[in-house]
Figure 1: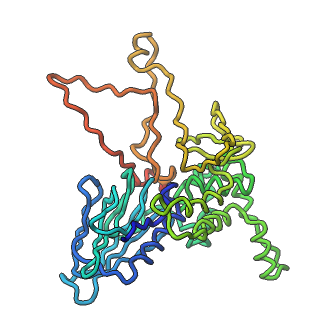
Figure 2: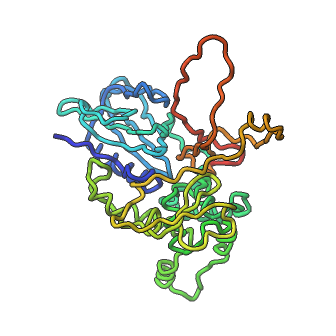
Figure 3: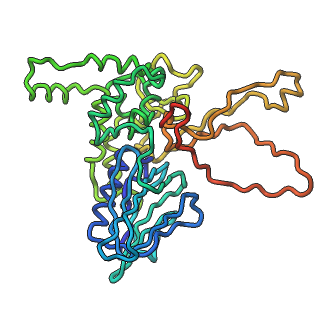
Length: 402
């Protein structure tokens, strides 16, 4: 029996290392396989149809930051004759690739590529439980995303230090690290681990942290081996943005996710030092994301924000065992109640419909509790309201690009 083989850890949200592991999975599992026929999309997915059909084609993948490019390449003589097609995937909160028997597809397989006969027919599936993942035709990386922290380190470093005047670096360093214009591939668990290793308060001003790196130059008297040794012993924040994701990739394992058992994910859980660990504190940043840290949160910590400390328990829980704390309920009186009390109506700045690249677009906005939607008055019968899956916009807004 062929078992489903997941392409990256499903216990944590996909960040740069998970996309890199997913591309490695696709390339390893699809090497030697010939696919054929049409690409099949589930009827519930709101992503575009993939207009591709070939009697014989190969599949390969390439990752960059938080995006993965899938290339469908027809073999010589395949019918109908056509050019290769590329798709770019963003995994959202729960995206992954899995290879499974075509007659036992995994749940939530929203895009499927089938192998050609003879032999047992398999399906490479893009699986996404929560449906926040996206794919786009054409194969172009999303405009505005910076160089990949894993594969384009020198360009990544230069891009950050060259743009420190950008207003993104007025914000706390924990929020700036999620800005995909500059830190393409860094997400929630990586930012916590990187800041924790350097003992940098998460709510220290980003520019204050990074300006010192502009002046950092190794002594010209050092030999090359001495320079390398010094860098390994005393890495700075930008170096850790490269080396820490590499550590996750190097954890390896024979597979991730519930079908592979707890053994493989245990390596990642043992690797964590800060994210969701007992004894660590947490606060929500201004985008509603929980940041884990130890000690002083820093001068830009949200006013009135209550730090929560994770207590040690008999059984050590990993971050996959918890859900981030919901935001506190909005206790301000509603518009109707304010009118009854004769209070002036509150005005708030209109929020964008979806997160920009500055807010890490893989994460949907946190809903605000304590508010009830008021339906407009209608005549006649009330029609039941349809519940739709929210798809956050990934388009840059203004100068954003996260």
